[in-house]
Image (cartoon, rainbow, N blue to C red; front, side, top):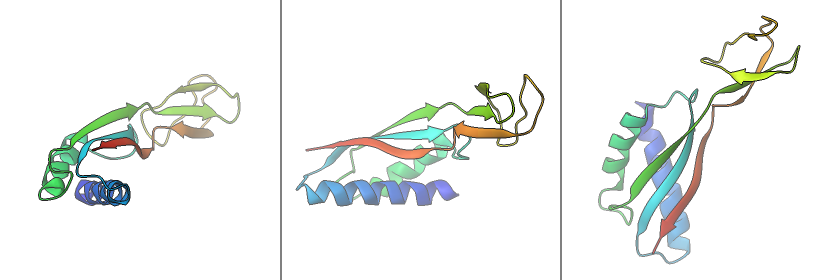
Length: 113
């Protein structure tokens, strides 16, 4: 379950930055997670609650924003939604598709007091 490792790394990074700014506690974290990132949001939420226990992020709310999976055809240069990392162009049927979004995992923001 790599969601536990992700939750630990996110919480550690946020707590470190919050403590550098003399925060008493972290109130919320916003993540951007691509549809092709291979992360199960429900599992991440479950792990997140466990990781936050007994930290300054114990009452923290995790907000997850999904980033759509978009590909761009190298041959005809159209962009389109994709359902996997191995996509073909719906216009010219070429397999030369660059995934331009959907693999992200970013800490978009966090709030603390």
